Image 1 (cartoon, rainbow, N blue to C red):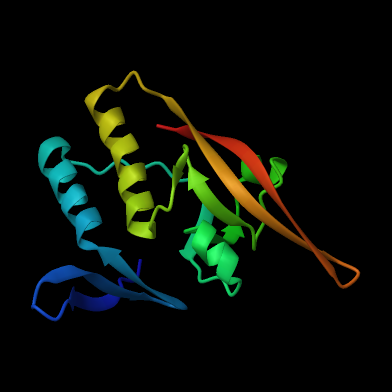
Image 2 (image 1 turned 90 degrees about the vertical axis):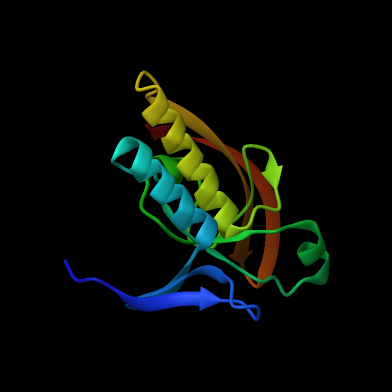
Length: 158
């Protein structure tokens, strides 16, 4: 397995904000809060547990000013979860809330998923969690674009 290249991401005051990692073709930045949670979890449990939604996500910027004011969103880069596909969640859809929490940043999403793993490591009887997604679906048909909101629940393995 090939490793990545990268280094610390620092702010203007010299504080560490995260770690840049280059995984071809998409470079990424892992937030310091996510790194610290992983270290804490590993120090306490000798492992890191994090459920996977089964969909690739990235933070996106919307061109529509009204939508920018309404949503802090994640664009779905790829869906490889048959459950998500059965729920109609597809590449290009936009997640606008997770478990009723709006305006999550991508690091906050990572921290939320790590908190589910933390709960599992504390209590191994926890096997499944439901994650409720509100998805903004954009459909293009015959040069007309329509939008709708869809509420879906994905069941995660612990």
